[in-house]
Structures are given as C-alpha cells and as structure tokens.
Image (cartoon, rainbow, N blue to C red; front, side, top):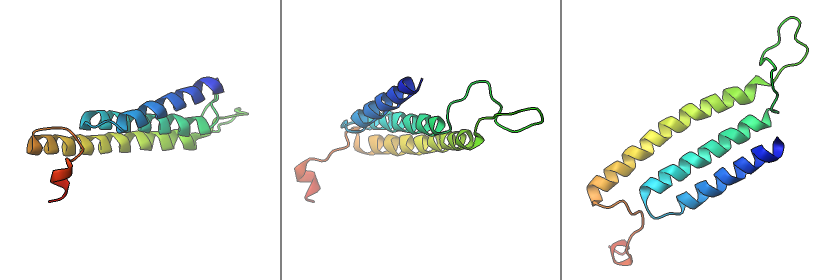
Length: 112
C-alpha cells in the first residue's frame, strides 16, 4: 500500500512540475492543481493510513486513526479551491488584456 501511495505522490508531483514549466497559462493552473493534490495525498499519508478505525476515541475503542492529517487535508482542499479560482481569474484577465495566453515575454518587449 505504501509503494502505491508513494508512487501516486511521485507521479502527481512530476506531472505537476512538467505542467508548470509549460508556456501557457492553462497548463500552469493544471500543474498547480496537480501539485496541490500531491501535497494533499502526502499529508493524508503522514497520518498512517488505517482502515476501519474511528478518528476519535470513544468507549470501547482500543485504537483510532489520527484526525489531524484529515483536518489538514480538508483545510488544504478548501484553500486550493480558492487559490485556483484566483489564479484562473488572473489568467483570464491576462488573456483578455493581451489576447494571448503565453506567459513568456519576447526579448524586445522585456527591455521597454
């Protein structure tokens, strides 16, 4: 199980970095989302994946799973949705203003 989760984290990270290095805004947004998913899975995996265990202690429960990584992942998901919305709006504004979604500048434009 650990090999599968760590492989998934590695693939998500590699794909996210590859997409961020593209020269268009939409792949950059997708790459940031993939990196966010990789971090979420990593945070969730740090809480030791336990099957069929409650996240809180109650009477009669001898073992439980750690609820802190679950709360951190839930918070990270909400924050990533908000940041993705902000980045999409910035990219859309730049596309409307410039008429192109490329994120690099020509050398002649950079000197002005």
